Picture 1 (tube, rainbow, N blue to C red):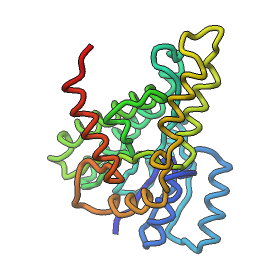
Picture 2: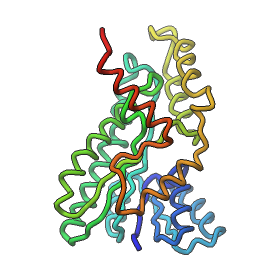
Picture 3: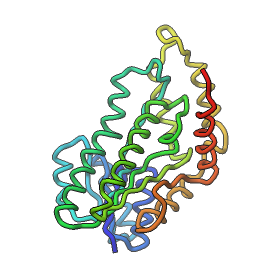
Length: 266
């Protein structure tokens, strides 16, 4: 049975998936960003009697954490760690976009390169799963910087899919729709912390109306348990689709959006 490392496992999809896979008997390394998360996750594992769930600290921007984690044995890597920055792309401070890319793109790419290099050297036919997003395939106004970072993740995964195939290493993406984990809401709130009506030409009220149109409806606040169940299904298997958009309604939305791009005019 596979050994699975999940980054960003201290909350949301990562936490739920780590627990769920361990409950199914898989050996799971839940890699979390902070020491308080380590303590909380270890207590949870103990309370649930999950002997196959190991919790380790992994801040992808901490070279010591990365070096320590690379010594561990696992053959499935789930790149789930990520942060988000919200606000209009026309005015968002570039340093915030750079910060978003540093964690979501560059740190994940660097870590993945090191992992697959070890696998190739040892002849391990592993699997890399990127937790992308539906917004890695389309762009929504409240969170375009985050969306751009996930577009980059999607492109990286597509490239690695072809490059690693000769070595028996599989690559796929999981693209959740708008689930109510709290992540989308905090990303939007991050945009409101810098938007200033005295400085910015896109006003806070206008931005908030766009947010409400996306996240204020039931279809923008889906139950994360469904997505976690899908991730538990997809991650361990060695057969399946490269692109995993969920739920089906979100997949239809993505396809419709991409078709509309061909007809868009300026």
